[in-house]
Image (cartoon, rainbow, N blue to C red; front, top):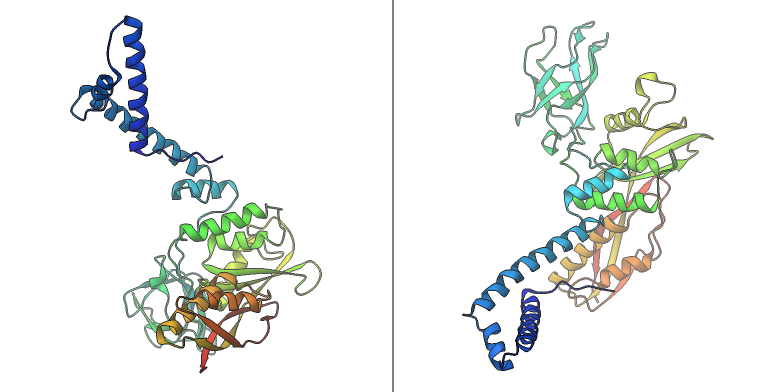
Length: 378
């Protein structure tokens, strides 16, 4: 049964009615002759003392109602404020992902046998600082690939492959006082997880409680620490007792293929088989295999009515929102749902979805993403 929040006006009328009743009963008990009209004027006159008392009481009552309403919202994760949402999530083992540092690999060239220490600092052209996270030695070939991480968390640490990083302090024996980022780039830097994303993960966990190593535990573990957009577990990926963990990085609006450095970092976090230095968070002994997602562009051909620029833009936005919400690694995407999303676009009266002509069927490691839209004239 709903209990609507009373307005100050509702509370005022209620208090005035109670006050009139109390004064009439008092007058009758004392044998006083007072007309109901006089009592009503005394209670309801804006300039009267009784009215001032009622207004002050109503302010307190309304504040109390608001406080009770606020507490009611905090009891449920989908209406709780951020601090209490985080607490709800903690109870279920879902933790708000902090801002993450970008990671990647760079190539140093120099004299064979030259050691590259850990914690060597480098700087990008934009002033972002990076540091090597493991020692290495330049082999006879004269070049070595070294893991690096941004020193500060956040998206500012993401740098495209092929860019040059300069050494903060010289290192004798190098051909150049710097390093070149490998083709994958330095990636994975992201801001703190948004409350909306945290709530989505919490509701998923509530619907699928922890099972200490069940397949749907892996997405929670990964998303607690890494800026991933999609995760899917693949049972017996390379044989009995193995678990493939397929991940897409970035956001649901803009998923991307993970870099090799990111896959290695996630595997270290989950735990490597028979590796005491990387036991990880999973309480099971299954062999984990990291699987990079394969993005599957889905081109669309649409005959639209009315075929106007604004309506095309609305349909394009609706399609992208649909893929962000509905697309899942390895899961069928129903054609009817896609058509329904197009129908909901602002200004659309009718349409014919020419391509795709059937539901999208990705492979186990594929994630459907929106491709180019071809507008077919009516």
